[in-house]
Length: 341
Image (cartoon, rainbow, N blue to C red):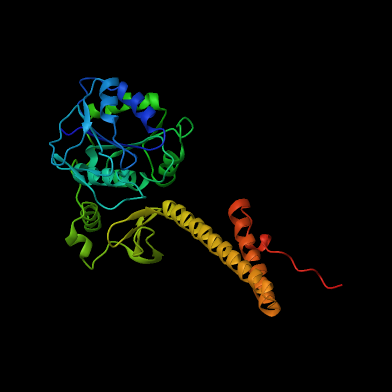
């Protein structure tokens, strides 16, 4: 009999406190294996395994590539590496970022769903990013159980809300009720097919995450080409549709939900505007110096031309500054022409 013995958990902002509370309530004889992805800065050492071991009865450790999966253990993703679940073993890989995260929640959930089907329980906890919805969708598609922390009590509700928007979850619960439910599920028979069947697009996506060059370099890509470029590498993004959830992946593997892509594009636009503002102000400063120099040499026409350049460039800079600082549209920021009298 196969039970729900593969528990995958994703958290971001507010996740440390949330995971501590959850793990504290799991019993010493918990029969499932627990896999945790917490968004974490790439180049900072993580003490999360030690923290979880200290607060609860289950041993926790950073996952090691090829490590055999054992019940009653907590496997924590290594910073700057994806954690994937294969049959009987874990993989720790430094593949392309997903939703600008590594480790990312979606690859863990997707790999577990493909490997273990209805035996998987996916849990989305507090977080402010867009990661996790696509992975939880995969868990449901393969017959697993989807649990989301109640957004009303989550320290950061965005990630639970995004999951609820796109996935028909089985349970929306306050944190205090999640651990007892996991204990009960770990003792119940998993309904449906215990081992999922890989689809070709899923196989390709998992291979790309593992930086399989044969999968990356093949001409066959999952989805259809979009009109958008990858913010990370500039390559073409391909549309991928998971139910109502639209996401994107480029040919070398960077992946984004529609929400995360929109956010990244907004960041890139702001950076471009700041660069444009700097360029305009430098241009105005240089034109003013040239105007002053021309005036000093009584070159009136040249000075007038440079001063006009200063006026035009400063007006353009003012428009961009108003957009950046005050959030005004270019139309609202531009000076209005007076009506003829």
